[in-house]
Image 1 (cartoon, rainbow, N blue to C red):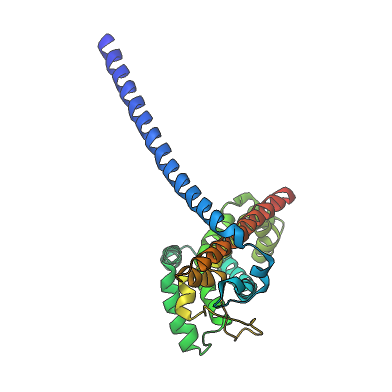
Image 2: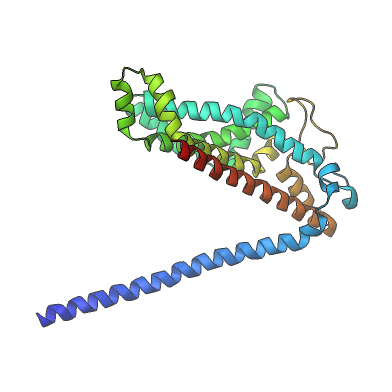
Length: 291
Protein backbone atom coordinates (compact mmCIF):
# COMPACT_ATOMS: atom_id res chain seq x y z
CA UNK A 1 0.00 0.00 0.00
CA UNK A 2 2.80 2.38 0.88
CA UNK A 3 4.38 1.89 -2.53
CA UNK A 4 1.08 2.69 -4.25
CA UNK A 5 0.58 5.72 -2.03
CA UNK A 6 4.09 6.99 -2.83
CA UNK A 7 3.44 6.53 -6.56
CA UNK A 8 0.16 8.40 -6.27
CA UNK A 9 1.83 11.23 -4.38
CA UNK A 10 4.53 11.49 -7.05
CA UNK A 11 1.92 11.60 -9.82
CA UNK A 12 -0.08 14.25 -7.97
CA UNK A 13 3.07 16.28 -7.33
CA UNK A 14 4.08 16.01 -10.98
CA UNK A 15 0.62 17.10 -12.14
CA UNK A 16 0.69 20.05 -9.78
CA UNK A 17 4.08 21.15 -11.11
CA UNK A 18 2.85 20.88 -14.70
CA UNK A 19 -0.31 22.76 -13.78
CA UNK A 20 1.74 25.50 -12.10
CA UNK A 21 4.09 25.84 -15.10
CA UNK A 22 1.19 26.01 -17.55
CA UNK A 23 -0.56 28.54 -15.31
CA UNK A 24 2.53 30.75 -15.37
CA UNK A 25 2.83 30.39 -19.16
CA UNK A 26 -0.81 31.36 -19.67
CA UNK A 27 -0.42 34.39 -17.40
CA UNK A 28 2.74 35.43 -19.28
CA UNK A 29 1.05 35.06 -22.66
CA UNK A 30 -1.94 37.12 -21.48
CA UNK A 31 0.34 39.75 -19.95
CA UNK A 32 2.33 40.12 -23.19
CA UNK A 33 -0.86 40.74 -25.15
CA UNK A 34 -2.22 43.21 -22.59
CA UNK A 35 1.07 45.10 -22.33
CA UNK A 36 1.38 45.36 -26.12
CA UNK A 37 -2.21 46.57 -26.39
CA UNK A 38 -1.74 49.14 -23.62
CA UNK A 39 1.46 50.39 -25.24
CA UNK A 40 -0.36 50.90 -28.55
CA UNK A 41 -3.27 52.64 -26.84
CA UNK A 42 -0.97 54.95 -24.89
CA UNK A 43 0.99 55.79 -28.04
CA UNK A 44 -2.24 56.56 -29.92
CA UNK A 45 -3.62 58.66 -27.08
CA UNK A 46 -0.41 60.69 -26.76
CA UNK A 47 -0.33 61.42 -30.50
CA UNK A 48 -4.03 61.87 -31.13
CA UNK A 49 -5.60 63.63 -28.15
CA UNK A 50 -4.13 66.98 -29.14
CA UNK A 51 -5.84 66.68 -32.56
CA UNK A 52 -9.31 65.94 -31.19
CA UNK A 53 -11.19 69.14 -31.96
CA UNK A 54 -14.47 70.21 -33.60
CA UNK A 55 -12.56 70.84 -36.84
CA UNK A 56 -11.82 67.12 -37.07
CA UNK A 57 -15.57 66.52 -37.47
CA UNK A 58 -16.44 69.53 -39.61
CA UNK A 59 -13.49 69.77 -42.05
CA UNK A 60 -12.98 67.76 -45.20
CA UNK A 61 -9.67 65.99 -45.95
CA UNK A 62 -6.96 68.38 -47.03
CA UNK A 63 -3.34 68.35 -48.14
CA UNK A 64 -2.69 70.80 -45.29
CA UNK A 65 -2.68 68.95 -41.98
CA UNK A 66 -3.97 71.91 -39.95
CA UNK A 67 -7.09 72.11 -42.15
CA UNK A 68 -7.73 68.38 -42.58
CA UNK A 69 -10.71 66.61 -41.06
CA UNK A 70 -12.79 63.45 -41.17
CA UNK A 71 -16.17 64.83 -42.17
CA UNK A 72 -16.57 62.94 -45.45
CA UNK A 73 -15.11 59.75 -43.95
CA UNK A 74 -17.45 59.82 -40.93
CA UNK A 75 -20.50 60.44 -43.11
CA UNK A 76 -19.37 57.76 -45.58
CA UNK A 77 -19.02 55.21 -42.74
CA UNK A 78 -22.49 56.09 -41.44
CA UNK A 79 -24.05 55.79 -44.90
CA UNK A 80 -22.36 52.46 -45.47
CA UNK A 81 -23.68 51.07 -42.18
CA UNK A 82 -27.20 52.35 -42.93
CA UNK A 83 -27.18 50.49 -46.26
CA UNK A 84 -25.37 47.42 -45.01
CA UNK A 85 -27.24 46.80 -41.73
CA UNK A 86 -30.76 46.07 -43.05
CA UNK A 87 -29.53 44.01 -46.01
CA UNK A 88 -27.19 41.88 -43.89
CA UNK A 89 -29.78 41.46 -41.12
CA UNK A 90 -32.54 40.29 -43.47
CA UNK A 91 -30.33 37.97 -45.52
CA UNK A 92 -28.26 36.64 -42.63
CA UNK A 93 -31.06 36.00 -40.16
CA UNK A 94 -33.32 34.68 -42.94
CA UNK A 95 -30.67 32.20 -44.07
CA UNK A 96 -30.10 31.09 -40.45
CA UNK A 97 -33.83 30.53 -39.91
CA UNK A 98 -34.11 28.48 -43.09
CA UNK A 99 -31.07 26.31 -42.35
CA UNK A 100 -32.01 25.77 -38.71
CA UNK A 101 -35.80 25.53 -38.82
CA UNK A 102 -36.84 24.50 -42.33
CA UNK A 103 -34.03 22.74 -44.21
CA UNK A 104 -33.77 18.96 -44.02
CA UNK A 105 -30.64 17.71 -42.29
CA UNK A 106 -28.96 15.94 -45.20
CA UNK A 107 -25.61 15.97 -46.99
CA UNK A 108 -26.54 19.02 -49.05
CA UNK A 109 -27.39 21.19 -46.04
CA UNK A 110 -24.30 19.94 -44.20
CA UNK A 111 -22.22 20.97 -47.22
CA UNK A 112 -23.82 24.44 -47.18
CA UNK A 113 -23.17 24.72 -43.45
CA UNK A 114 -19.53 23.75 -43.93
CA UNK A 115 -19.09 26.35 -46.67
CA UNK A 116 -20.68 29.09 -44.54
CA UNK A 117 -18.42 28.26 -41.61
CA UNK A 118 -15.41 28.30 -43.96
CA UNK A 119 -16.40 31.66 -45.47
CA UNK A 120 -16.51 33.19 -41.99
CA UNK A 121 -12.73 32.72 -41.80
CA UNK A 122 -11.80 33.83 -45.33
CA UNK A 123 -9.45 36.88 -45.43
CA UNK A 124 -11.28 40.11 -46.14
CA UNK A 125 -9.13 40.91 -49.20
CA UNK A 126 -10.74 37.93 -50.97
CA UNK A 127 -14.14 39.56 -50.56
CA UNK A 128 -12.66 42.72 -52.04
CA UNK A 129 -11.54 40.83 -55.15
CA UNK A 130 -14.94 39.13 -55.40
CA UNK A 131 -16.76 42.46 -55.04
CA UNK A 132 -14.53 44.10 -57.63
CA UNK A 133 -15.41 41.35 -60.11
CA UNK A 134 -19.08 40.96 -59.24
CA UNK A 135 -20.39 44.40 -58.29
CA UNK A 136 -17.97 46.94 -59.76
CA UNK A 137 -17.40 45.28 -63.14
CA UNK A 138 -20.02 42.53 -63.45
CA UNK A 139 -23.12 44.49 -62.43
CA UNK A 140 -21.68 47.82 -63.53
CA UNK A 141 -22.22 49.54 -60.18
CA UNK A 142 -18.82 51.22 -60.39
CA UNK A 143 -16.74 52.37 -57.47
CA UNK A 144 -19.78 53.60 -55.60
CA UNK A 145 -21.12 53.63 -52.08
CA UNK A 146 -23.54 50.83 -53.03
CA UNK A 147 -20.69 48.61 -54.25
CA UNK A 148 -18.76 49.12 -51.03
CA UNK A 149 -21.82 48.40 -48.90
CA UNK A 150 -22.63 45.20 -50.80
CA UNK A 151 -19.04 43.98 -50.48
CA UNK A 152 -19.08 44.56 -46.72
CA UNK A 153 -22.44 42.78 -46.58
CA UNK A 154 -20.83 39.73 -48.19
CA UNK A 155 -18.02 39.98 -45.65
CA UNK A 156 -20.23 39.85 -42.57
CA UNK A 157 -23.02 37.58 -43.85
CA UNK A 158 -21.28 34.30 -42.82
CA UNK A 159 -20.63 35.71 -39.34
CA UNK A 160 -24.27 36.75 -38.92
CA UNK A 161 -25.56 33.41 -40.22
CA UNK A 162 -23.35 31.37 -37.88
CA UNK A 163 -24.10 33.51 -34.80
CA UNK A 164 -27.84 33.52 -35.57
CA UNK A 165 -27.87 29.74 -35.96
CA UNK A 166 -26.16 29.35 -32.60
CA UNK A 167 -28.77 31.65 -31.02
CA UNK A 168 -31.61 29.63 -32.60
CA UNK A 169 -30.09 26.33 -31.44
CA UNK A 170 -29.96 27.67 -27.88
CA UNK A 171 -33.76 27.94 -27.77
CA UNK A 172 -35.10 24.84 -25.96
CA UNK A 173 -36.90 22.29 -28.11
CA UNK A 174 -39.80 22.36 -25.64
CA UNK A 175 -40.77 25.85 -26.85
CA UNK A 176 -41.26 24.57 -30.37
CA UNK A 177 -43.14 21.47 -29.21
CA UNK A 178 -45.46 23.54 -27.01
CA UNK A 179 -46.24 25.88 -29.90
CA UNK A 180 -46.92 23.01 -32.28
CA UNK A 181 -49.13 21.37 -29.65
CA UNK A 182 -51.29 24.50 -29.57
CA UNK A 183 -51.86 24.22 -33.31
CA UNK A 184 -49.39 26.87 -34.51
CA UNK A 185 -47.80 26.54 -37.92
CA UNK A 186 -44.03 26.34 -38.32
CA UNK A 187 -43.76 30.02 -39.27
CA UNK A 188 -45.98 31.07 -36.36
CA UNK A 189 -43.76 29.04 -34.06
CA UNK A 190 -40.59 30.60 -35.45
CA UNK A 191 -41.90 34.17 -35.50
CA UNK A 192 -43.81 34.08 -32.22
CA UNK A 193 -41.72 31.82 -30.02
CA UNK A 194 -38.30 30.86 -31.35
CA UNK A 195 -37.08 34.13 -32.84
CA UNK A 196 -38.01 36.35 -29.86
CA UNK A 197 -36.15 33.96 -27.56
CA UNK A 198 -33.11 33.97 -29.86
CA UNK A 199 -33.17 37.72 -30.50
CA UNK A 200 -30.53 38.65 -27.85
CA UNK A 201 -27.95 36.39 -29.47
CA UNK A 202 -29.01 37.39 -32.98
CA UNK A 203 -28.70 41.13 -32.30
CA UNK A 204 -25.38 40.67 -30.53
CA UNK A 205 -23.98 38.79 -33.51
CA UNK A 206 -25.29 41.36 -36.00
CA UNK A 207 -23.86 44.34 -34.11
CA UNK A 208 -20.48 42.69 -33.60
CA UNK A 209 -20.37 41.80 -37.30
CA UNK A 210 -21.14 45.43 -38.19
CA UNK A 211 -18.36 46.50 -35.84
CA UNK A 212 -15.93 44.36 -37.80
CA UNK A 213 -17.14 45.82 -41.10
CA UNK A 214 -16.62 49.40 -39.90
CA UNK A 215 -12.96 48.70 -39.18
CA UNK A 216 -12.18 46.86 -42.43
CA UNK A 217 -9.97 48.51 -45.05
CA UNK A 218 -8.75 45.86 -47.51
CA UNK A 219 -12.06 45.14 -49.32
CA UNK A 220 -12.73 48.84 -49.82
CA UNK A 221 -9.22 49.42 -51.14
CA UNK A 222 -9.91 46.77 -53.77
CA UNK A 223 -13.23 48.32 -54.75
CA UNK A 224 -11.63 51.74 -55.07
CA UNK A 225 -12.85 53.76 -52.10
CA UNK A 226 -11.17 57.14 -52.45
CA UNK A 227 -8.61 58.51 -50.01
CA UNK A 228 -9.39 62.17 -50.76
CA UNK A 229 -13.09 63.05 -50.84
CA UNK A 230 -13.89 66.73 -50.30
CA UNK A 231 -17.66 66.28 -50.62
CA UNK A 232 -20.49 64.29 -49.09
CA UNK A 233 -22.11 61.51 -51.14
CA UNK A 234 -25.59 62.60 -52.26
CA UNK A 235 -26.66 59.15 -53.44
CA UNK A 236 -25.72 55.50 -53.27
CA UNK A 237 -23.97 55.65 -56.65
CA UNK A 238 -21.57 58.44 -55.61
CA UNK A 239 -17.89 58.03 -54.74
CA UNK A 240 -17.15 57.72 -51.05
CA UNK A 241 -14.56 57.18 -48.37
CA UNK A 242 -14.68 55.71 -44.88
CA UNK A 243 -12.72 56.25 -41.69
CA UNK A 244 -10.25 53.32 -42.03
CA UNK A 245 -9.37 54.40 -45.59
CA UNK A 246 -8.73 57.98 -44.52
CA UNK A 247 -6.66 56.84 -41.53
CA UNK A 248 -4.63 54.59 -43.84
CA UNK A 249 -4.02 57.54 -46.16
CA UNK A 250 -2.84 59.79 -43.34
CA UNK A 251 -0.57 57.20 -41.73
CA UNK A 252 1.15 56.58 -45.08
CA UNK A 253 2.20 60.23 -45.38
CA UNK A 254 5.66 61.25 -44.16
CA UNK A 255 4.57 64.36 -42.24
CA UNK A 256 4.25 63.93 -38.47
CA UNK A 257 1.15 66.12 -38.38
CA UNK A 258 -0.76 63.63 -40.52
CA UNK A 259 0.33 60.81 -38.20
CA UNK A 260 -1.25 62.74 -35.32
CA UNK A 261 -4.43 63.13 -37.35
CA UNK A 262 -4.41 59.40 -38.02
CA UNK A 263 -4.08 58.74 -34.28
CA UNK A 264 -7.07 61.03 -33.64
CA UNK A 265 -9.05 59.11 -36.27
CA UNK A 266 -8.12 55.83 -34.60
CA UNK A 267 -9.41 57.17 -31.28
CA UNK A 268 -12.73 58.08 -32.92
CA UNK A 269 -12.95 54.67 -34.57
CA UNK A 270 -12.22 52.90 -31.28
CA UNK A 271 -14.87 55.00 -29.54
CA UNK A 272 -17.40 54.06 -32.23
CA UNK A 273 -16.57 50.37 -31.90
CA UNK A 274 -16.86 50.51 -28.11
CA UNK A 275 -20.24 52.23 -28.40
CA UNK A 276 -21.49 49.53 -30.78
CA UNK A 277 -20.26 46.76 -28.47
CA UNK A 278 -21.91 48.50 -25.52
CA UNK A 279 -25.13 48.75 -27.53
CA UNK A 280 -24.96 45.01 -28.20
CA UNK A 281 -24.68 44.33 -24.47
CA UNK A 282 -27.62 46.65 -23.68
CA UNK A 283 -29.85 45.08 -26.34
CA UNK A 284 -28.98 41.59 -25.17
CA UNK A 285 -29.78 42.42 -21.54
CA UNK A 286 -33.01 44.19 -22.53
CA UNK A 287 -34.35 41.25 -24.53
CA UNK A 288 -33.27 38.74 -21.90
CA UNK A 289 -35.29 40.62 -19.27
CA UNK A 290 -38.35 40.57 -21.52
CA UNK A 291 -38.25 36.81 -22.02
